[in-house]
Image 1 (spheres, rainbow, N blue to C red):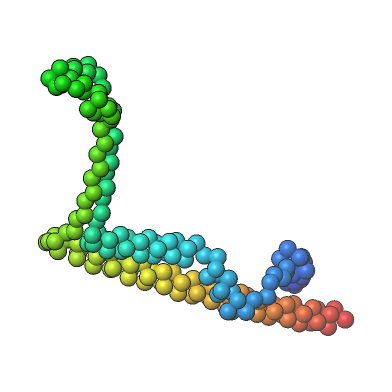
Image 2 (cartoon, rainbow, N blue to C red):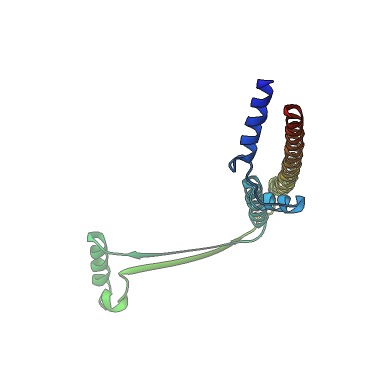
Length: 186
């Protein structure tokens, strides 16, 4: 009987303690799921993976089209060999070299090119197909992450409800046992 009373007394102390019996936010199931979906890192990571796969598909598509390229260079010409070359040409002609070519100290060049792959042996097509499969896989991974988080949030919500109902049952049991104790001790 002493062990029984000690157990009831300990249960009353623990249930009346604000640390153990603190009430938090009251959420509905939909609110709990939306909160879990908004704050889950796995979903954020899956969204970033999907975005990366989408941009990869875009890059692969660009490889099969026209490619434009432009290059430019500017060279300063000078030194011992340059001056001897100019001197030789100046002696060979009637007019001085500097007067015929006054800005020959710099050399400029520009080049433009356009290219398009005609035949790649199916390599570009296979890359596009692979990138599409990677995007589909990322979409499915994102949906899987969302469904997993929804399941975990719902399971945790129902576990909290179950624990709350167990606490209510235990509180009723304590009240019944206190009544029984009062009846027995009278």
